[in-house]
Amino acid sequence: MDTPHLVYFSDPMCSWCYGFSPVIADIRRHFGRSLPIRLVMGGLRPGTETPMTDAAKTEIRGHWSHVAEAAHLPFDGAVLDHPGFCYDTDPAARAVVRVRRQDPELALTYLERVQRAFYAENRNVTQVETLADLATELGFDHDGFLADLESDDLKTETWSDYGTSQRAGVTGFPTLVAGPNSDGAFGVVTRGWQAGSQILAVLHAWIEGPSAGTA
Image (tube, rainbow, N blue to C red; front, top):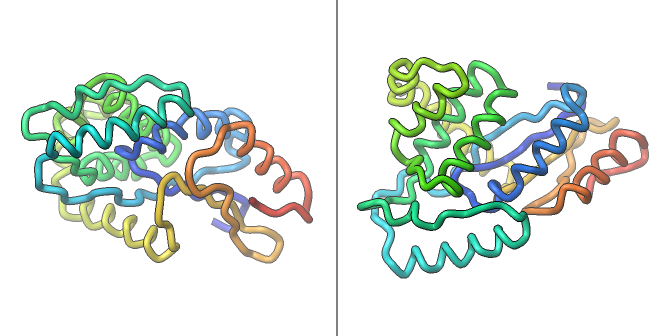
């Protein structure tokens, strides 16, 4: 993509990305299709097979409380108490990539839906059945979506996203990048959560002034 756009490195089971979801919604409302958002799955904890310990659950709920305070979003920590819960982020990321295949803009909507289901609605999005249920809300066929989630090509495509994130030097989520500028370069808008007013100000300055750069 040669025209100005954003690259959003995210993960559906990243709490700060959930906290950033209203900011992404603000960007979409303000700029619409004039500033497309390319969504890349970062790979927070793909392939995790060990159930969470009580100590790990306590620690992560502490992190979630910070996100709730900053972003003013609801959290239901009981989701971590599902029997044998493993914090494997790969199925949810794979589901987002499946939606992205069909419609990149709809993938952003689905990403937010998965985040809300996990963090606020006590729904275990490490389970493919849950992910397919959420996809049906956006018009996908349940059984077809399930079959796609287990396909080798979708798994490869999702892990390719993780590789893109690593090659880009992304070390945390959310990370938002904007470009290209007049020189064809990209710049970081934010590494980590920031309030929507700050992000929108940076983007307006970048778009409206040729001498303005990203933060």
